[in-house]
Image 1 (cartoon, one colour):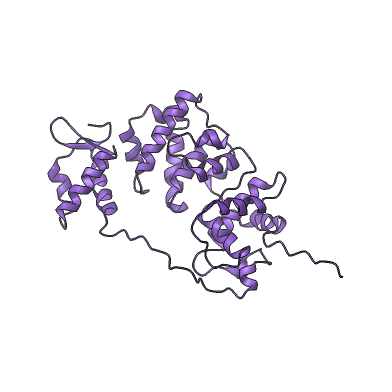
Image 2: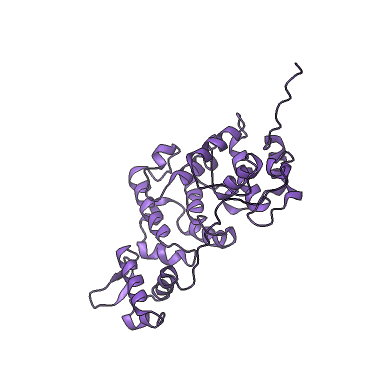
Length: 297
């Protein structure tokens, strides 16, 4: 029998890291002097929000609240107002709650242990691993949508990843180099999915992964169920955002009339959206029946 020829590594660390050395974006949370708290803020902000929208807000936040205790001392409504139009404003509330726990229980320091990070308000599996990896240089797999798409194509020859599963972490762990390059490799894999191996019209001619199995298979089209596209116009999310814009834009509580005029298409939907803001704790009713951001009534 002849020698068995080893199967090419579709995500060779050397190739990917060489590409990253040239292609890495100058993102503010990657610069020297950034703390684990700053990285935590960036990871929460970047959830479902483009980098271009996050960067200027992030820089304002880390200057305004450089340590958790600084944010914890601020009213939650002030934090929600500073969140601006990043979307999903409950993330701002969770960050405020997280800052309070870090200030009270962790001496103003973000923990490095994944299991401890998971006990913090608003910190899920991805965010905990991202902090451990990017803030503390730990060799843990970090899997976001971009990473899942790169792995689906390069390793499994599929155009799109399936539903998120624990297998994604296993795949990412197997790809990590077993040395000090692991954290930078994780960042490079994420960057590749964001810049080259994009969802639509991937730029395969610019890809450093010359052994990509999806390309070798002829770049077959996605054969699974069509991805659901979340609409925004006309949804409760849009109405909530319009109501919050009024509250954020005023230094004093506002009347119900000031809120009612922002959405007249469906009064029932408007009432439901306002009720949800009150239930979520993003807004509150003052003693005279007006409305304000939480903690500012």
